[in-house]
Length: 291
Image (cartoon, rainbow, N blue to C red; front, side):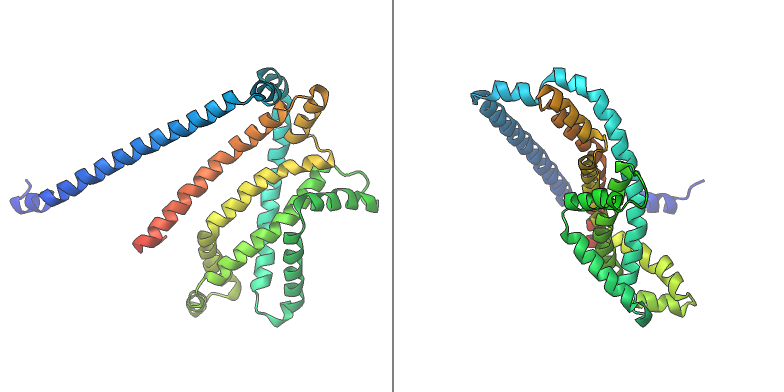
């Protein structure tokens, strides 16, 4: 049997009239914001549609870039090429994670013995971040086979190597910023508990750094999703190359639009995830809670 005191303690306290007014005001403001957003969106769409319809060349542009016939014809080959992009992306993500982490650890090391490696890592990140990705693809894709040391190499493999080398520099700098952002007291506390320098790095520093730089890493991943399409310049038949083949035979640019749509659909889930995590991280930091 529940006592009267327990029932009273568990009872929800009544909401004051002032709080009820505040809640009603917030609901009205939210509904007003939704209505304004809906009206402004409809107005913008209407302006764009009317502008396109009034353009004299719209029928020709529509047939050249948005033809359902050429879209359906090219779509199976584009999906087959997209599968190659996904395989390259999967391998590149693992390679960038490993190589970028190693570079970041070398750059943040304070051991005097590591000075030559630190200088080399700093030079590497500076050079790689300054070279356009398409130029790097040409250098790797045509330079390595030109040495004649390995025989014929699949263009997709060479493209993967170039993507890993290019994005490792960006990810390494992001991770380095995260490592340096971890307060020195965290390292000191870990060492005082008996952890070695390596254990402190892997068990204390890296987890905290990843949590801080996760949004930036997600942005790099989204950018890498897009840039794996550049392996087509080496002759790999990915989605972009498949679209190029279709365009060369039909002189209709709809396959390019279809390939772009596939890359957008591939990126949207990670873009939404990045936005959600960034907002969640911001709210927790503002509330003063632990992340």
